[in-house]
Length: 60
Figure (cartoon, rainbow, N blue to C red):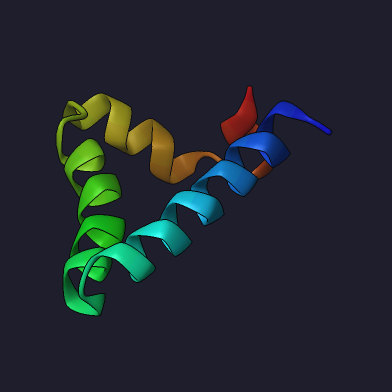
């Protein structure tokens, strides 16, 4: 299993645990809020580079 596949499986597992343990709206807030907060911490040049990158290039 590749590194990215392991990360994806872990993310799905954490998401399912959150949905069971927390109310659905709190789990949704966490699932959507963490990537949004990570994106907002990037400086403008990193955001530009991320928007230009294709999905295949993100793993590099």
